[in-house]
Length: 113
Length: 109
Image 1 (cartoon, chains in turn blue, green):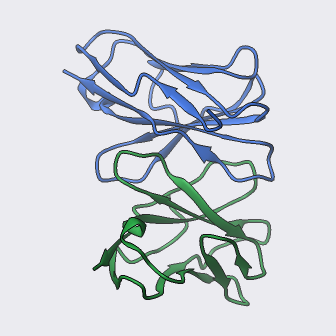
Image 2 (image 1 turned 90 degrees about the vertical axis):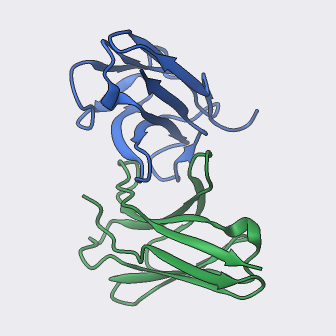
């Protein structure tokens, strides 16, 4: 498809397990963002890539959260030793370049039991 | 922290114009005003953005005051499918967005 694709759409994990969430940005988009959205709240910034370089990771809540984009296209958000407070929707967005709006995927809904 | 202030909720009659206000009194000269909306279980959808001038596209119009401290998103003929949470965001190009809690718009038949 032409939009940002995220997988899986839903993920259930037990507390303490590691999870990996995938984002396929729009082809050719240089910038990629990850956001976390808790129930009833607006999305909150996690991290930002320009091509393969992670330029801002100030929003990552702890060192259990790790993101990568090794070839400047697909990105993976990894959460280690998950905790219940990690339950949220994780949104990925991409933009063609710095001057263009961000386009969002439909997110991965993560539930930690 | 979100740099914008929006009313938490609004209603609009179907077929009428929906006018959604946003205050951004601390906006800086190089920050754009963006509007997104989010329908349940979907990601935010881009609507429109602007810097100084009013903007119009196939979805909406954006009116920015001359001092740039506030703006209004106008949906000219609201339909039931416009029911969503609308976010007003100010940001430098390429930087992270601060969403806040937005305005929940309900279009009433």
